[in-house]
Length: 431
Image (cartoon, rainbow, N blue to C red; front, top):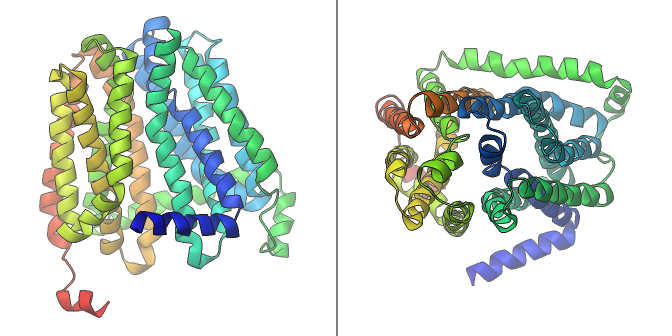
């Protein structure tokens, strides 16, 4: 009955706001297009082009750096010139990047293309999210954003597995690049016809006048706006708990970033798994996460948000440390599944703790600061993971990541958890 009620709710929302269906499909196709090359790019760079793991880490870091740099400026641009032009620009670039990757061979071109790809993603996601918020009233905005987020999560979960299956079927590392371009092309065409060409009647005349500014002027002003996040970080260092959370966020994503460029390489080159095997290891956990995401998300409220984060760090550390000794696909599926479930439990709880310990007027700044530190950690970790894989041992990034996650667990236990007090029972009853 619950499932039917939820289904009916979304059907009614789509009837009232048909645009949401288009947004969901565009988001799904674009995410699939982006995600299908995540696991296949390292194999293509390593096995077809002979690029070293250290350089592959640098290539992945270029994408993360670009997305971090341009996310705020392009969000401001979408406020000034409208969502649709920014969305379509991002999609067109994302369509061209995988095609261009099949024609170039030097690693510097891949660094440039990944930097360009980060720009495209930074243009697409914030603008599409803002468009969703523009068109739906506040009272139904949470439901609308769920449509957007679920399409993103489904695409991100299925895309990597799809990419490995496609490459395995065609016996080519390039096949996934063509599939990515085809999927993003579908999103681009649908976006051109289905997404509105303006932000709506809510714009004031003063905002309309700003459209006359050149794109370069807007980008310069927007880059200045993004500096507020950095200023927010320096301000939040005065809060001891938030300062600890900023450091923990940096360490955690540094560890996660170390695995991004080398996970598939390790599974293929060291464990001897085929791309089909790797696809299975990614597909199974994605389905499990989709099924259990909601109940596990509520688990944090029942057990306590700090306990959920601690458990997530412990489970993640144990899973990562066990991956190098994995001998069979079912075990790899279980370990990757545990990582996914730990993320589902821990990430929302971490965000909730951020809002609990931040001053009332600085909650948004705190969340943005945490996100900035996570992005910085991922950028640095990507390069470090490739370096360790190449110059230490292939298992070194996993050992280092596991050690960093254990460090995050102890730092959370000592510095964060004592400051997060559960609400009194009387307060809960009052609600």
